[in-house]
Image 1 (cartoon, helix red, strand yellow):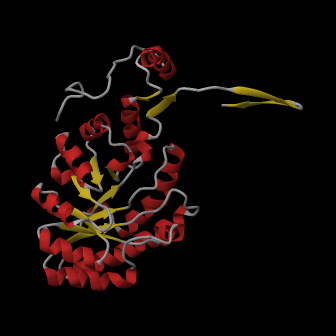
Image 2: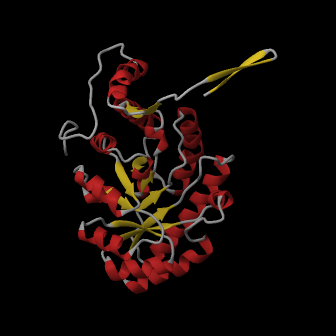
Image 3: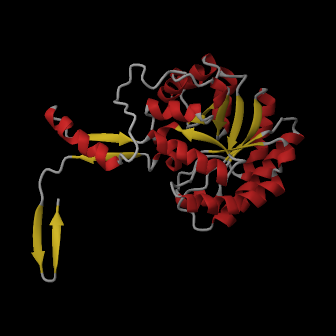
Amino acid sequence: MKGLADNPSYIIELLEGGVTLENVIDGHICEQALVEKSAFVVGDLGALMRKHVCWQSVVPRLQPYYPVKCNRSPAVIEVLASLGLGFVCANKTEVSLVLEQGVPPESIILSGVCKQLALIKYAAKNNVQHLVCENEAELSKISRLHPSAKLLLQLTTEAHAAETSMAFGFSLKSCRHLLEAAKDLGVQVVGVTFHIPSSCQDLQQAYTHALSDARCVFDMGADLGFNMNILDIGGGFTGLEFQLQQVESAVRPLLDAYFPPMSGVQVLAQPGRFYVASAFSLAVSVIGKKVETRTGTDSLKV
């Protein structure tokens, strides 16, 4: 694992007690202005650690896998890796970045739809075994280029389909055919992944349908001889602890019913915004401002 101070492309400071984010920003404004920079980002790496403590206390059974697309700063990757998180990567750049930070390939899941052949080959070359598969065409490519891969089948949920007309993945009706195709091709299927968007208004109903469908897929896979042992409930976590508690209330009894701890199923989740949303602030230069006086109120335009 690289150290945070090993040739960083950013400034790292250890702050004294009582120093606030506003103090840090104010201290850098003059410095950045001298080198004619109009914007900069300040990150609080300690916030990542505090979020992790919150995650472990509220949803201890869910093993967090961080989606690198949310913020791929090397400092973020290294801190989260030191906390024991896994990583979800969608392309070669993200996989390379995570591997460069010393993360073992077994802690990486390669997601992304319509993967290019070069990406699948790169995953095989670097021993990244866990890949998400959402259709039969993808399954065929993986069987040729990465036959030792361990697949997580992408299950489309009602909540995700309602949010977008381009929801990728397979329906419960088509999962048997996909599992049989994997069996014929000699590819391992080890689990299921799905996604419930943060905009979902009825978490209880959404997770009930998704986890019930996932249980059916696990049973079908087991009937075909697959060792189904990974369940990934995806993302949809905001940075609010209250929302995380709502998810926990909806998910915990369902997991106990469909995937109890004694089943040996590893349950993953993909908290991206939850970890980084409150950790970074963007400071920009205000070019000009004008105060417009209206009847009974003042309006400020920036």
